[in-house]
Image 1 (cartoon, helix red, strand yellow):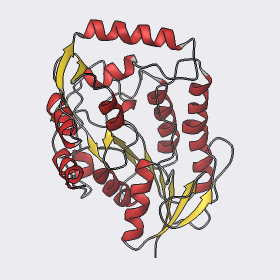
Image 2 (image 1 turned 30 degrees about the vertical axis):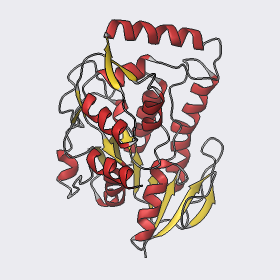
Image 3 (image 1 turned 90 degrees about the horizontal axis):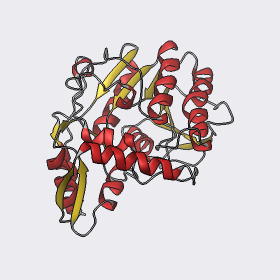
Image 4 (image 1 turned 180 degrees about the vertical axis):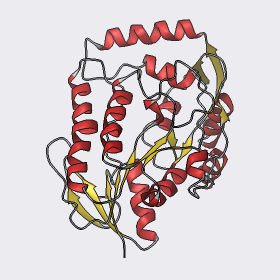
Amino acid sequence: MTTIAVTGASGFCGSHIAATAAARGAAVLCVGRRPGPVGRHIYWDAGTSVPDLADADVVVHCAAAVGDPVPGSSAEAAMHVVNVTGTARLLESAAGRPVVWVSSASVYDLRTSRHRISEEHPVQRQPNAYGRTKAAGEALALAAGAVILRPRAVYGQGDPHLIPRLLARVRAGRLVLPGRDVPMSLTAIENLTEACLAAASWPRGAYNIADPVPYQRDDAVRTVLHAHGVRAKINHLPLPVAHAAATAAEALSRLRPQAEPWLTRYAVHQLARGVILDVAKAQKQGWTARRTLADYAATVNRR
């Protein structure tokens, strides 16, 4: 029986991976500060210690600090400790074991082409601390021979970030989105989970992970809203106005550095730029994305 260590197994991505691995007969070690949904808990604080991975055959590293902290804040420093220093600690303990490291498409430089981005696209000039620390962490993992997965905007049941934030932005039956409608890749948690459980046997390197086809942003948003019983008209805010509002919100947030601003340039960047990931490299390893946003909506509607 294969023993799989999943870091961050109490979180959104990690809990799905741990539960699916256990359902398929693997022994699961849930590595993190809190127990995961299955298996044996191994306590680990990524910011302070090296995890005990002695019983693991394979390591899937999902633990990460997420968010969009104010530049120069203590939250930004804490993010670096978890995403970069924590990765170094994990790799130290995992030496000799296959490691699948969950990164993000946020590492890519999106000032140039954003259509059919392959793994060879430049990894540089990330717009916020999350992207920068994920890039720094994955550089360590790549140097150690790990497999890197780069999903974009992971969604699904139990998502604590993307979909709740979208629903919370609806005001008086309206949702304002920055810029015009654009095509973009999204990643269902089920598609990422399948990749995580298969990737330990893939050649080392980076792999994009996304749904079978890209979506039009506005249609995707409507699908999510309707699935949750929310009826809202989508309005478009001109990009210069959106950028100005985000810049002002970030400036005001410096007065309260422990709180994230209500709008950031990174959020505008994510919603207004059409980013389509090329997943051919992962497909060549036998991985196939089967889950779509329509499947997610159908699941929500059945609840």
